[in-house]
Image 1 (cartoon, rainbow, N blue to C red):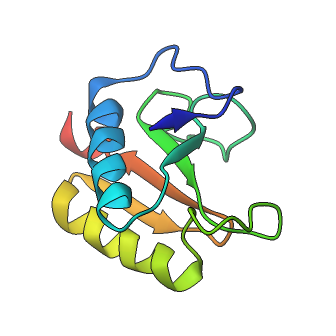
Image 2: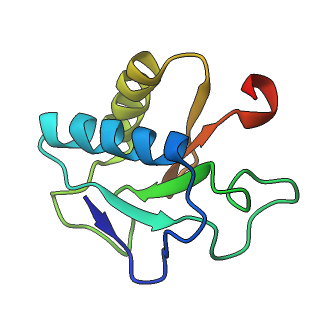
Length: 110
């Protein structure tokens, strides 16, 4: 697992850390490198779980990251499916085109 330099884990909740560990395993099993690109940094939609420490984004291949060790669109969708299965109903895992978003649904489970 690697954190992008701007992805500072300040305020990261244990539920997000657990999801990061599981996502790292899912990526590794399929031969990809897991890179967290955003935590509570950057700009996100209002009421985003990013700001509460419950969400993160991770890298997929894009025009900026063409290396083969990142998943392309089809493989990113497969990784999302596998991650959803392992994380269960407390989490949302969404392919958003240029990244995968993962969040613990704190408002529903706390």
